[in-house]
View 1: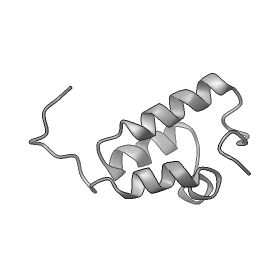
View 2: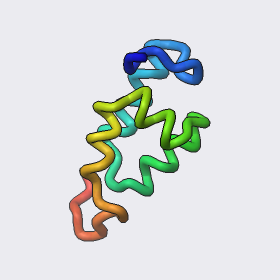
View 3: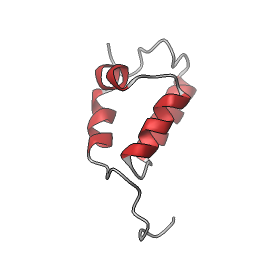
View 4: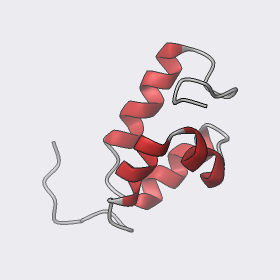
Length: 70
């Protein structure tokens, strides 16, 4: 399975939006919210999107309150 082959992510546009949301997340908690929005379990995310899972793994557990907003 590659990162484009998920039943819940039917279109390239939706997949791109999903990828962007994960890559611009500020915390692991935010990623969990995104996964819930796409009805995607953590296991399915890790198995289906290993590169994005590594990105998410490097995020802090909670958002950094002192980080400047872009």
